[in-house]
Length: 414
Image (cartoon, rainbow, N blue to C red; front, top):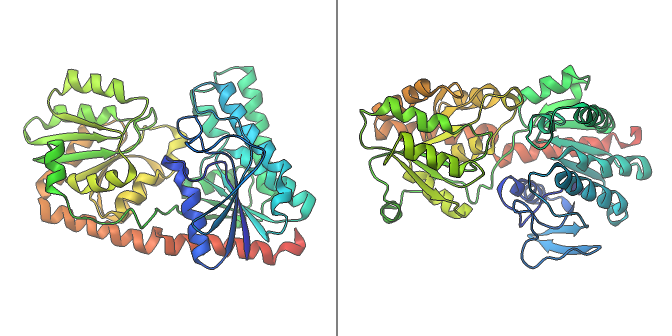
């Protein structure tokens, strides 16, 4: 089967933008011919990756995947106008250049942002090609809850327009895959037929995220000893990481406890100030690290922290940190609500506290501390097994391929 994937993000972009590449390689490993229609890499900096320049079209062969790049406006700042230009320019370029891939059997739309669905809608109407939508973020909810737009009549108009566009995209899709059960409930409440929706959890690059032994030399390099609670990932305004610093107030009787932040983001400077004021000497910031180093750092933490702030739209998303931590076999303390909290609880890999509740998070950390190293490692191994059985590439790629194959089978009715 020839699969066309429409995604604004693709290798060599980092962070959450690695997911389309992981999906593409997994589908190719199942024997499918995979073509990717994408833009020129500029995430997360908003600047073009080294070696690239904007041109009308560029072809690359990457890890056995045919990659077709079309122009866009590079941007990833806090300007609503800049973000809109970035999203809409790719959607328009991809819609205009669908002739590049008219021979694919089916499209997979990696729906983040929602505007990526535009070229698939055009392909269905002009060429009769079916498509399956994989929803990573609920739109327009994500936009409405972000700090890129201000409340007002103009925002209300944009949100209503996006609602209509998303409704049209879901109606035209052969099927809709979501990455968390709560998303399925929300879409069903908005009129998407329940039998059209299924949950396909994201998986991770299993060549990278796997159990590894702690490196004592690396631990010494960063001065990590005693009982280490580690947060490895983005430090943005949605992660709600203040609670981790605040929890230390309730753990003063564990003198060898260290909270470690590995990563960076818009909240890093403020968190550094908060830690210096309220928990001096107990918080270590390692800064941004390459993904390979992140994986080496994870076993240096006795427990991994996963955190999201408690906002309604975040209760129905699944942060990729859940899967990556489980895949690495690390025990978890989590400040989460909704689907992510339930999944961590089901995995048996750790303890969950309500978001923003510092005493409850402190209690979860204390319970982990008192378990001892052997029991913590046992929890991590159980989480790894849960990942393999429920969330792995083997499970997710087969489920996604089945959706695409069924779309082709139903094509005469498209």
